[in-house]
Amino acid sequence: MSGVFGLLNLYKPPGPTSHDLVAWVRRGTGVKKAGHAGTLDPAAAGVLVLCLGPATRLSEYIMGSPKTYAARVHFGVETETYDAEGAITAQDSRPVTRAEVEAALDRFRGEIAQVPPMYSAIKHGGRKLYDLARAGQMVERVARTVRISRLVLAAWEPPVAVLEIDCSPGTYIRSLAHDLGQAVGVGAHLAALERTASGPFTAADAVPWEAFRAAMEAGTWAEHLIAPDRALAAYPALQLDAEGAAAVLNGRLVPAPGLAGHDLARAYDPAGRFIAVLARRGPSWKPHKVFAGADGEE
Image 1 (cartoon, rainbow, N blue to C red):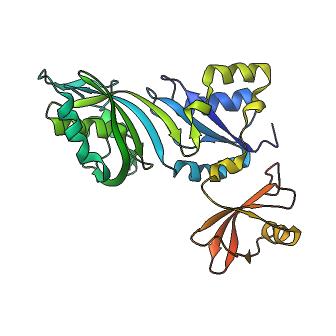
Image 2: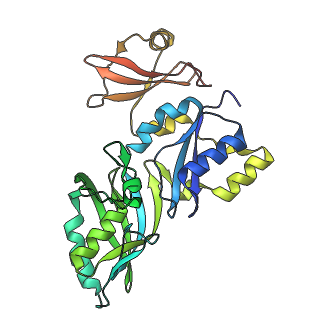
Image 3: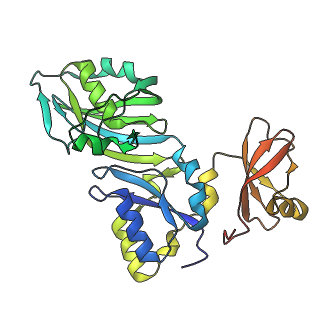
């Protein structure tokens, strides 16, 4: 199906991979160009944003946006994958108190150095870490700086803590669960995970996968498309006149009055159609990613 230029906010159920949902959407919609804007582990549920058609060029803005999660962390049991899918590697039956968990959380707020789990898609020497792990090879991983802006103990159901987390992209909640277990002293793993928000896209607004699959079968799936410029909701909008729009569509600079402090902007033509992502270049805006109109054809 040609001419599709938009986003889908799907609620991924536990079980299938993010790639599975992309493949099923391609087949069910006939849209060949599709991809997700930030993977979820197979066992995880929640917001999975898909980009269709030229909107795949906007995925980086969604992937780079803050994330919100609800996580269940099981204390006293460690696993090789840091989640419930892996084999148990250690157990500790010592009772853990809510006060211990609350005290340990303080260490993980703000900017922290986090070592990615061995079972992850990060590459080492050209091979994905989880492939090395499955082959029995453990390698040293470089710690990454991530930011956890909110970390709340929403419920305590011993030995499980229910956490609410606002964090930077690239944060591994499995590593957070593992490290929190180490801080408490009994080990822990991630028992369940839900992504409740990815940038402006929330679980409350997401279409459940089963409902979207039914819509594909009924031929009504396009009703769930979201305008592609939603991916850039955090950036200012620049309404262009006919001359400015023509300049942008032809790759030329346009003046950048106002909007101080912003390096990117959304550009619209006189009809209100989203036509480009602009990047600031001194006193001007330079076309960064250009779309020729409402259908997104380039």
